[in-house]
Image (cartoon, rainbow, N blue to C red; front, top):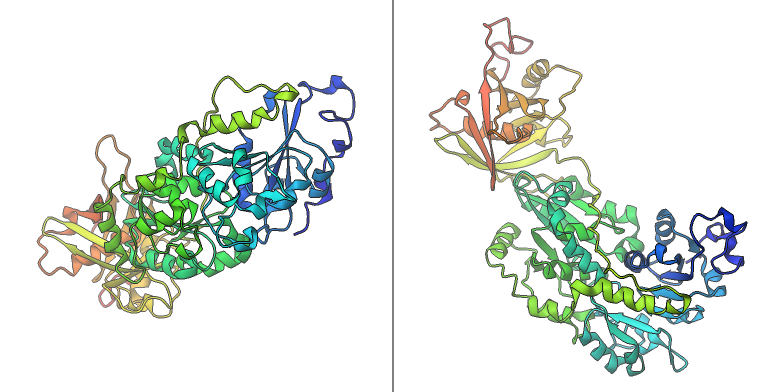
Length: 594
């Protein structure tokens, strides 16, 4: 990997430490007392590094720099990530020519010995679990705790090794006993921020579409052929097409190494069909922690994000365990053995509901507690150890413990809503219609479960002609709703219901035979008026029409119910006489189809 472009290197690096070209009178604040270098090697470690570096306060006289330790196979996108943050970035060449009071890295590599600074290393996930022989040189040591990574010519390279639990120090004493005295259990600052973000759950869920009764399923996959994506690449598509769209929102979190190895276009193209059906994808830089907070279910593997989700008491199912690449003595291996399973080829809808009914938050607690310790004090302990290196420069530890800020709200990559659905449901005598809509995906859908409901944007050659419901979802359309409905009634003979959005809570409805009504959602006092989905409305009306035993008219109203959410819809007919009001336009007379 090429180093960061030289234009990123600061010209004042040639001057004495803490100085700037020019006179002191130009300064607003006192010159810094100490300089700390953050060392990134992969995007995964870089995101964790940035998080940890926030524990170092500039107001205490600390100046922070960043550099990229080159050579990783997963470094693509790292330069642009750091420069996009606006931080001070040095090339590796320049970083190794200067001296610093401390270097911090959330990964470790023997080449970091070239830095003229005491080195503190921390994990970039939930502890140290994975066997990566390319890094460790043996099949017994987990990555980050091996002799090959921590030693150089008989000397331990880091002067501080942060771990999330005392048990990892015991493991280090087995894999590299010389390094054990340098280890310190610091907890997990990342997970501490996740816990501190719980009050923001509603805001995160809103960003991920978990509203109006929808519950959120988050798919988590680490990297390698043993991961969820490696073992079951079609599972995201299967989930989003098997789960009713009005009951579930589905998002996906993929390890940054997946993005680095296969590129952003490659990832999004591979998941394109699932995204067409509604899958949201969380970018690798940020958002996965908010997804952990927002989720109801997690379908994952042996990656850290799945482990964090279980630690946050989310309903967790494993579609892959990764036992073939985990340290058998690690909590992650125990997690892979004990966590509930998801059968990707089975009824995923039924499995999710069953898992929720049987969920016991205490079930995986013993495994989690073996990996994550002292979570509430992690920031304080980590900061104290870093500041200890700076004491000789006159930098004192702040009196107050660091306050974990809530993580940023997610910004998922998504496409437009699905444009075709397979709809099932039932209508009762009281006027309640229970609905389930599942998105249709070309090449994946094989057999209809119910009837098709499509929007005007659907371009599949067979679904619109076979649909029983057609909806126009754009309110500000070129052709008026009445004229559009009249014309579409002639063009599509199979339709039972046409719906055109008028605004967020109102729609025009045209039935087979030409009857037209206006539908509007009702609200209770003190509540917002619910939005009205034209496809959902048309599907409910179609179920009402095809029920031969219905005893009420549409003007009595319908209640639309999808899972745990329901909305009451009122219908009104035009108050003017025939030939002078709605329905009198082209195509509304006898023989017009609808």
